[in-house]
Length: 163
Length: 163
Image (cartoon, rainbow over all chains, first blue to last red; front, side, top):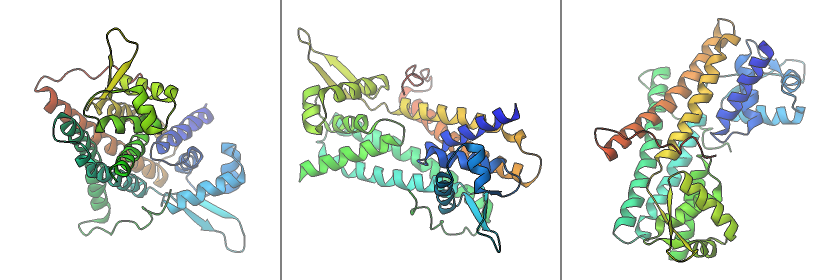
């Protein structure tokens, strides 16, 4: 019963992170790590999720580059342990940044349409997209302020680097 | 030169709408329609975007079901004309609804983790996701109020039906 609920949880995290452009397997690994009270080995992850070791290794590298997981080398061993971090801001911020770039590109298209109803329609659509992305950015900024206090850390350097 | 800029615009709209789960071809068709000052035929769309008539027909059906485009039958002819509408709220609302469902599923997983740091980490991650989705919902609600006046229309029935 609990095993079913764990599977359901892991699948939901995979589905949710897929909407922020993370491969489904990577999201599932993050879901599993979120349930772990201790760091786990790559073998344990592969066994529980029915993934190959290669797939788990790729997923863990992606999570690490997004700041979603921390890889812990074991002294005197090639074995690695992994644990989740709560740092999903970088992922959401990268998604925002990508959307902002696209919206800027749309704005540049406004003069492809002559003045009139078509240009107004385009202007409305771009405005709604832009507002939608902007409120997300504000939330992330205020979240970061709450975590880091009144003198916020600079944005994570990993945000623009990953997929 | 303008043809290049039109292509760039159309590709940007395709990329942007892909992040809200719309097939890339469908987003490109919407981009092209946004540039049109008059309704256009499916053949015109197919020719300009290099898509098959079947692909354009599928894309137009999806846009119609999302309220992103309006199909205009021509009396005495099987030819259809299509024009963009500015109604992207249904698309964004469906994306929000999907995210809310997933976040609710994550919340149900909180008791899969014993009390302690792991549960706090999970609680933080779910809280940030939930807040992120919530601010988007508020923006859409206020946008809808601005468009419809103080007595808002009920949410579009198409929002949950499409992909």
